[in-house]
Length: 391
Image (cartoon, rainbow, N blue to C red; front, side):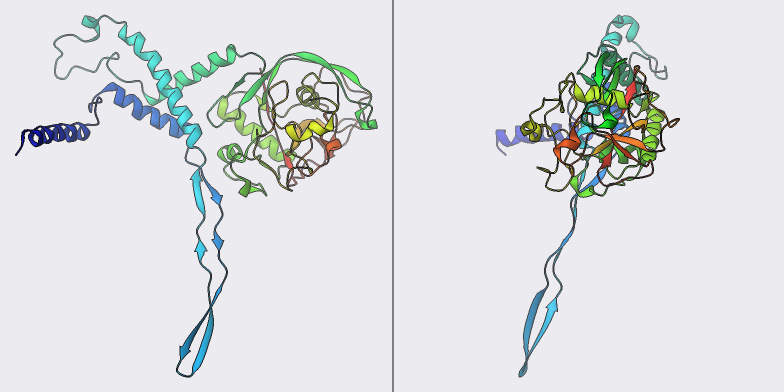
């Protein structure tokens, strides 16, 4: 045996030994290895496996086959080939993000423990059955989850208007909307009059319409008619009652107050400082850059976030799917207050309101002041939602 082969054999033996004991650089009892394992568990809890059909199953055309049998030719139809559906885990990205956030949170613990003097943290002689010291062990999954929650709270406390946060890995990203006042309504239609000034406190609003993946994660099923569009498409076929059930579930899971926007909050956020028909101005030739509507949608819904955001950092406020708001419908704004609170059914009707227009509608229905009253139990293929969260 050559000297080279002898040395290579020794190296291979060491490499195999390292793999058998938990990997190179992480021994079986290494706290770093334990942290990685705990963070994998935390990430899986925050973003569970969510299999999604990306390509539906397909059956090919039948084929006609003929064979010679003695003097006769016998023909028959052979069934077409079947291409099975292709599925992907829609939560791979969120799970990876949660894992990285967990590792980052764990690193904040390590310096604090490292600051303890070595002679206190690890005596030279430790009895065989002496309990493991707190400085020596890796944080538990619960501790890491608490650290991540604390980090999210710190990010929220330091958020500035236009920035977005998430209360959990599968929660909708929420943009901070600054307090302010604006003129609500327009002279276009009687139900949008009179134009009146409204003053609002700050709030968080969904950066996008609620997606099918988000709905499925919290509600356990997907009611959408356009499932083939994908996990990142807005959930559709949602009634006002369905939307209320979703925000209730979201509030219970996070301990935060999620709700539908009031009509005033929605229009304030959609305008983003504009006094024109759309957030970008009065030129409807710019609409395809900002919205999915009947002129560019191809007759179907599209994934969220593909069009330009408005000045507040919100996507798809025009088009894609109509969005439910909290308010009952009143025929006009004659008796509406100036504080932006939701109007309830006293003096109005049982109908609730949707805003924003959809992929099915023409440009005038995508105006920021357009109101669309519907029965709260109706959930058409272009009805969705966007959530807000109180500060």
